[in-house]
Length: 446
Image (cartoon, rainbow, N blue to C red; front, side):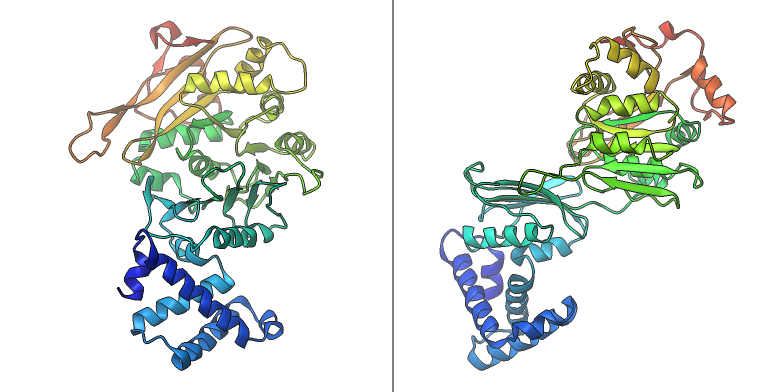
C-alpha cells in the first residue's frame, strides 16, 4: 500500500500507525538538523519554507523512495507536525469546514454545510493528540491537565476551542474547534433560502424603527450569522457595543466597541462575565447593545437596558420556538442575584422585547427563519405572541431536501402605527389587523 493510500485510509491496525511512526521518525531527524535559535528568528512562512527544504534534503539523502506526490505529502505531514497542528492543519485550511470534532485519537468528525461526517484521519496516539491540544491552548496562555481538565477559549485567529480530557472524557481527549463563517448579508441569506425579500423588508423596518429583537434558535441554527446580518441594518452613525463570550460578530459600522468576556485564570481569578460587561456597557453611552447570547443572570440587565432607553438592541437565546424563547428569558432572568419575583419578570420582558425571530436547522442541513413573532402583551399578563411570518414545509421527497414556502400574516395596528411614525413603510405582503383575538389561537402563553 502506498504512503498516500495509507495516510488516507483508517484501517484497523497497522498502516496509519506505521505512517504515524514514519512522521515521528522524520520529525526527529528534522529537529536534529535545524538550528532552533535561528528558526525562532524567522517569520512563520519563512520557517515553514526552511523546514520543508531541510526535510527534502533528508529524504533525498536517506530515503524512502517515494513518488513526487507521496514525497510532498510526507513533507507536509512532518512540517505540520513540527510547526502546526498535525492532521488538523488541512482541516483548518478547508474553508468549507465549520466545525472540527476530535473524539479521541481515532475519531475525527467535521461539519460541512450543516452536515456532520467522519473523516478517514486519526492521530498516531493519545500522546500526539495531547501534544496538539497543549499547543493549541498554549497560544492563549491556558493549560490543560488533570487539575484543569476543561478549557474553553478563542484562538488568535478567531476559532473557538473547547477541550475536555480524561478523567472527565471517557473516550480520550476531546477537542472541538468551531470556525466562524464569513459574515453574510441579508440578500445573501435570501439566496440561501433562509428568508424572502418581504421578510427582509420587514426586519429592516424593525431594526431601523428601533424595535428590540431576540434571535432564537437551537445550536447551529445560524443565530450569530443572522444577528450579524441584522446588525448591518443599524445606521452607521450610531454607537454600537457588542458583548460576547467569544468574539464572533463582524460589524462593519465605524462606531463599534467590541467587548469579550474573560474566563478565570489558572488560579481561578480574574473572571469577567457577560453580566459584568452588560452592566459596564450602560456607562459607555451606547445607542444600541448587541449581546451575542444571553444564558444567565445578565438577561435581567439586558432586559432592563432594552426597556430604559436602549431601544433597538439585539440578543440571541437558545430556544426551540418563539414562546419557548420568552419562557427561557424569564427563567434566565430569575438566575440573577437580584431578588425579583418570577411573575414580575413578565413585566420586564413584556416592556423590553418587541420581536422574536425564530431559526431552525432542518434535517437536510439548511437553516432558515421559521417564524417572526411580535410580543404584544403588557405588564404582568401572560405572554401573547402574534406570528407575522411562518415557514410552511412540504413533505420531504426522495431527495431528502426540505422545501416549503413562507406565509405572511397581518401586523397588529399598534405595531403598524409604530412603523409609520418611524417613517418605515409596511411591506406589501403584510396587511394590518385591528383585533388581536382574530389573529392566532396560541397568542397567550406562560
